[in-house]
Image (cartoon, rainbow, N blue to C red; front, top):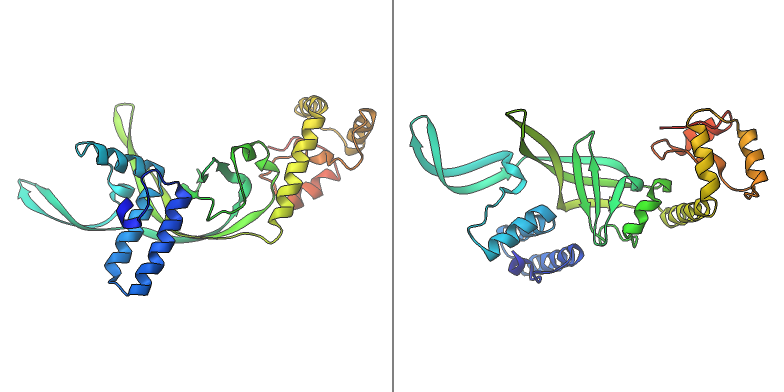
Length: 275
């Protein structure tokens, strides 16, 4: 698969996407059969997903290594084999078409987990998983962003194709199937907001200011865990500690799961612990 992409074995996810895009343009220019482009896309989709890539790399070292069926085999499969009693023994997989579903949604950037070479989105409620590389998400992220990402209010428009996958777990003496959907890396489209840079800068500055007054913020957070505090009282306490007047007090214990409109409406009445 690395040869199909013309990428080195240790290539990063960004390098794999770049190799995929370049090779795709080359194939389109030469007018090769569509099967060549399908093989290219298949190689990228497997190598761009960390779990599948690790399994494939292990197989290259030792062909006897146990392998996972890509995306766990939910879909239509065409096999050849022989019947045996009440079962069918498959000897060869001829083709497999996974179940795919197109989805469009707003993705809050605060819900991503940032790594050095990728950003991971997991939605436990909708059971969705998606991996974004630095080329797809060109905002210069790194693991330090996880410390202040909850202050980012920006969202991205996502259009992607998801395939169903799953795993069996042994629980209480019985096997249970856990399923979710994972985005095909080649079928992800992302549109970032125009004011993204401003939103990121504001979040970083706010985090820095919280750090400057971290001791006082910790005391206030502990207090509002048990008793609501009126905004005027909070402003009085802040002035006593010489906290700047433009410090956004209502964000001290505001959780980003609430939209900015809710924050604005609530902070005029009282300062409460929002969870």
